[in-house]
Image (cartoon, rainbow, N blue to C red; front, side):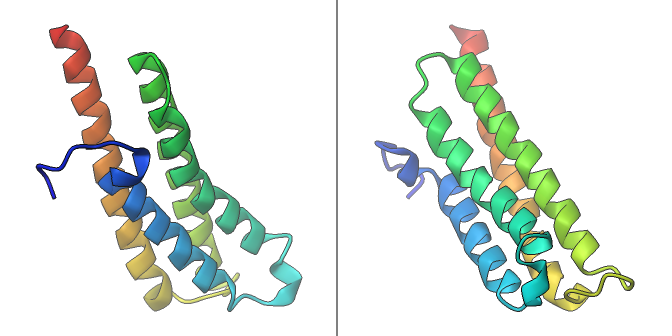
Length: 129
């Protein structure tokens, strides 16, 4: 697939992986207590959905600098998501446990690496033109 032409943001591995991450977050928060619906559940879902949304929004931008800026916003949402996940598994909050959150945090790390690689690639492209 590495040699495939990218015709849409949906062809980007980083978008696909961030969608998988958002889906995992939705599944996780389904186990949270109902009283957290407007609290941590909402925060996790919002930040998780923001990552692929910003990747797709930036894809159509005319200028490389705008594209990179939206990817950086996606990075910020990713860090926000990680913080909410870590907080939700802290012993005094205990909405979930570390064992449940760890695989999702690993997905976060993977998406973060992909975002950084795409940003570097775009920056390097710009420096050669």
